[in-house]
Image (cartoon, rainbow, N blue to C red; front, side, top):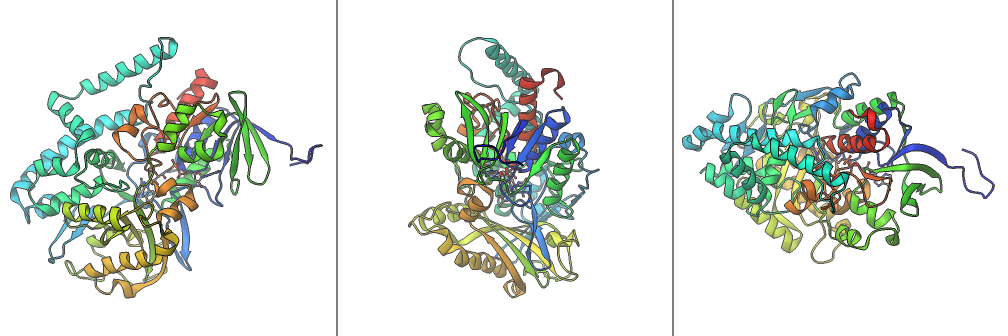
Length: 546
Ligand SMILES: Cc1cc2nc3c(=O)[nH]c(=O)nc-3n(C[C@H](O)[C@H](O)[C@H](O)COP(=O)(O)OP(=O)(O)OC[C@H]3O[C@@H](n4cnc5c(N)ncnc54)[C@H](O)[C@@H]3O)c2cc1C
């Protein structure tokens, strides 16, 4: 870097600059660099990966800081970017989920055991379970077909863009024709109805409904009785682990192992990645983006920018208001962001022993997603309490203990656990700051686990706590929204981030969306990054698409 005559630093020039080095930014960079473009990734934090990172949070204890479990990462992206060759290893959980109940009962689900476990509560439910899974799987398959494609975009007029979108709509229609009428009705139900309604039509026992319904409120600040929550349940079902559909697993080394492998793939193809490089402003000439200015004054020029950052952050903080269409900005300001999640990592001196299934040596329950939310009514109350008071005295906690599958995370004999807690208000109702409530709520989360596993609180030797405000400050997740915007019907598919902008192109020429604010939304999928790269290549190098 040299100083120029006017005192500012000489600008670097690239074909594409990616704002944010989250997993989607890295995926986008890797595909574009692979196609021969000169790509630069600018990441604000000291490490790439965004919400999918592993860090030491207590001396000797490492864990996935935010995202903590893998399933949605698309197999095509794993293969295209050679992620396994770049060090990624994903292992299955010994059991999928463990739901301890206050009365000492429990459900422990996973390959070969789910039906017999359900039968403990209802033989009718156990008999229906396979059919439910088969139906959900058919719909999830359809969704899998759609995640790596741009949805049909709504455009005005009938130019070539109109024709292209018509072709996309026809392709979508063709995909949906693969479903029979009953399945199409279920698809509509899943997009519009509540998880509680759908689950209650299938099952009678509360623990089964709770275990399955938990996915409908993960990252979704809503009651499972609210319309639209069934879609979030479906969103969590389209993944797979090592070819096993719907399963969830663990990346050895934590979620950072995924993003480190992506960064290696991108770098191998020639992408430059710079950390501690916060973009302060997007530079525009007339209606075309021309580069970015960093917080330290450095300018990086490119006629194509791909935004991996939360789109509300991009449009309300990094671009001048006057540069944007008025209606677009008005809608973007209303774009709903706020998951109601609270995240903790704890260092443990020993494994917890659950009242429902005692034992301090590693058992299947310790390797499962441990869900503390015994009924849909409990989740509904947690949501209503959070709306009123900011959080519930009886919060929802999912706990994973990845050190039971991965000895790289904790010292021998010790463990780390992820606590993913749902239904705290993104903003506290009485105007209090999360900075004042953080520790009180963290104590409550630990006490909640302790109520099911006495002695847990005493085993905590270190902790890291991230309130919604911390998630926003640390990762740029506005309102702590884990998906970069709620997965509600008005913010999904052709309407993500809004009608007219679903094709990964923003309202300014040269500006693209490559993060979770674009279809198919949040989760460690890589799909928005992949799809945006395809759109960018279609515009810059039409003959080198993938
Ligand atoms: C607490 C939590 C738990 C989750 N659990 C799971 C899970 O278990 N499994 C799962 O699949 N998904 C999970 N998710 C969701 C998933 O992690 C996210 O949806 C996904 O990682 C978002 O990826 P992204 O690349 O689109 O954006 P991000 O990961 O948000 O990346 C955006 C990047 O932009 C950077 N940035 C922000 N501002 C600037 C700026 N001005 N200049 C430069 N860089 C900037 C940020 O630092 C960040 O690195 C979880 C998320 C959270 C927060």
